Amino acid sequence: MNMKLPALFAAAVLAATSFSALAATQVDQDQSQNLQAAGTVTISNVNGSLDDANRQLKAKAEEMGASHYRIIRAETPGDSSLWSGTAEIYR
Image (cartoon, rainbow, N blue to C red; front, side, top):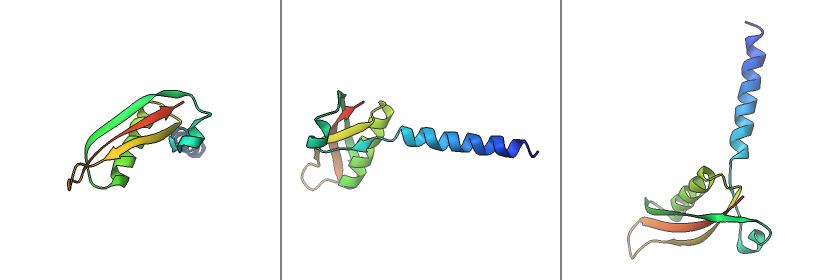
């Protein structure tokens, strides 16, 4: 039983490290100049606020393996709370 605890702890640390390595960081246009573009991701019909749309774009960027992303469009038509947006992703 004593041998299992260090192995469990090591597995937990490794899992936490790998999750943080996958987190994409938002950048602005100036910061993106030195990054290699890898395409775009889009969202549509996201209910909520601009922050909710941003979280969805970040999640899609991370799914695509991006290290960074830059929101290039975020909008909601009229008085709707359904957002759409596009982000450029970088590796």
